[in-house]
Length: 345
Image 1 (spheres, rainbow, N blue to C red):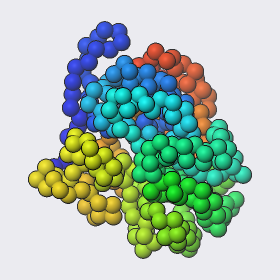
Image 2 (image 1 turned 180 degrees about the horizontal axis):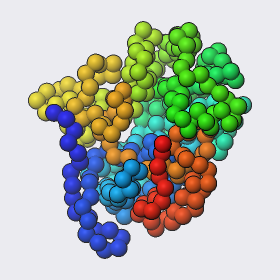
Image 3 (image 1 turned 45 degrees about the horizontal axis):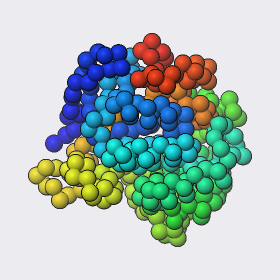
Image 4 (image 1 turned 120 degrees about the vertical axis):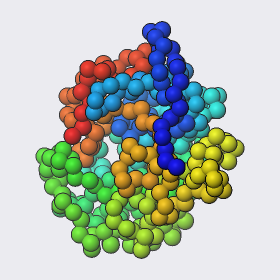
């Protein structure tokens, strides 16, 4: 059995138009932009309205996404402190939430320009974990960057510095190595941070061996995100950021999520375990082949994140991002209008 898409329902838009919408169980907010940091109020207003409109970045066609069936929202953020005040609204609607919290340390390199200090972000991490628990606030060090400016030893030190502060506030660390899309390569070069097209085996060994020691010291698991190299020898398993096994274990009181996360209706007791060679039958078909995430619906848009991280692949230019973000009105049902540029080459 494979994932064949979300249930479709009829909804009424803000303009009174009756349209078809998909009604996902899991909403991703968002891989494409930092909704908690910049669009938290917009998101929770749309939750109250019951739907959002999403623009396909490739064919420019709109798609309506209803929250009627939503059981889980997975947030992705580098600066999620703004959502703390809104989280009770999810509880009221009986919608669960998890957070993929990217907590890097590139302060000295100035690669993440518009985020708070590391100390402030660590404090936010602890606050959110105190609210939700360590299995719902999940640490990412993403991407790992090694070049002439940042050695493997320095990366190990950066990860250890953060982990020493937060390891008791999370249950896992997810890593990925920088993917050098052309736009990323160009941006890094302009910043004087030229990168090799491929890390050496010795560099990967040094970093992953250190991660293996950290994992044992801290008692948390380390996973890779859509990474092709097999890192099992370092106890680093191929991970799923939207992980059916973790969801099933955390939200035991939600029979709808429990059923969706089970491997097959014929074998309801089985989950897709981390590290298993089997791919979950409901793997997200819209993600990369190496990604093991279960299906969700992402509602974000490219070219809307003003963090302006040097290594970002989701923005074309600062000018486009500033234009798009300045157009957004709180009453809008969409982060972008149909005519705006969301291409990401």
